[in-house]
Image (cartoon, rainbow, N blue to C red; front, top):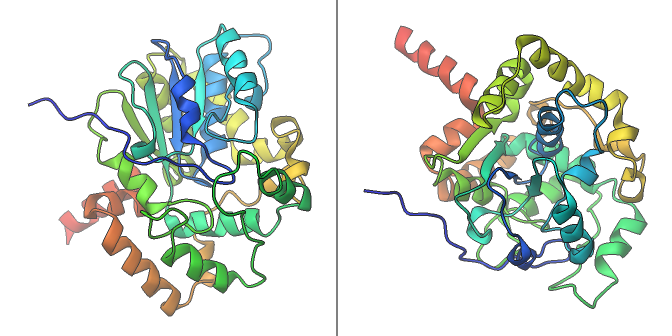
Length: 319
């Protein structure tokens, strides 16, 4: 029996998101759609795909120009669509929408990037606590076109942010992610359709552990022929150290959004920092959220990645 295809169930409109912008999208047969929650490796994957798409070219456009975030309501949709229509290279488009808010097409290839929610939280705290007044103004004050409440100022205490983020949703059908949008629910919405032939899941931890291997896996999925030498070159160019060193080039306008600009955006690139921050009481809230939102196999992948899950499986067989 053929697997059912994803369907749009929810309308995502907020101070930052507008899922209706995807109604303007007309797929090309070789399009690539990079779908993540937030702070899960979005820009990392965009940069990897950018290097693959422009492999062998003398120069390539910047990530922001080459790979627009279509559901971001702040940038005029006409400008975004004109840019997409004019692109002659293989297109790769970013979305932060859960799959239950994104029109699904059989032609594009989807790459879904995931990361342990506790690591996402630590990275999001760095973002949220460093938003500039200009950013707040850009998403909150143009009331015309904004749906729902403005984003609140970041609380001074990380514990307060954690409690709200892990127990409260921004949209009425969500149960975590406030004041942004769901993180756990986002991943589960994609995971439910992981067996579709045009769906590839990549984990942040696997990129950290074996970047060349993951780049090769992405290239093979996208039907791109790359040599081992080319894979090594892309891995060197897209390592966290390299991206942080070239942060101003990759994110030339980051100073508008973040205090400290691109260097704030490219913060640590590591996992596990939550272990020294979240208390046992905090982690019990995480357990509650995971139990009500994630399937057991989705949780296993989200917390460990593919490589980590394989190691756990191997370890259990030896016991």
